[in-house]
Length: 111
Image 1 (tube, rainbow, N blue to C red):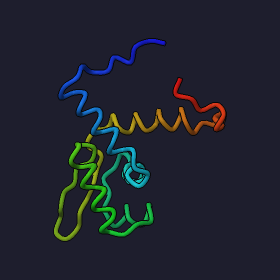
Image 2: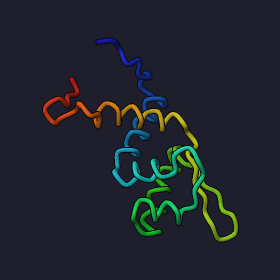
Image 3: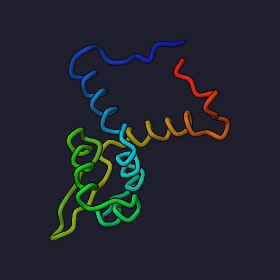
Image 4: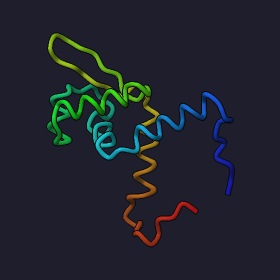
């Protein structure tokens, strides 16, 4: 197995860890998926993921703090967009690895 070339201990490793922690929550994954490659209003995200405004706002804030999402206010509307497109690639790869047609609980392995 080849090396993953993870960053050395320090700021880079801490950033990788924080991003992975932030995207590990199922609702946050749904939020990122709902936003995708385009900017969306929080009200549209709420409808797509089926959660309350306060719950969505809390999770958006977590994703914003680690730099995954960015938000902007226009009058009384809040818009969100993915600020780090690499996260979409990571999630696409994760889906391919763990949710592919040929994946069963028996074949999922981290080894």
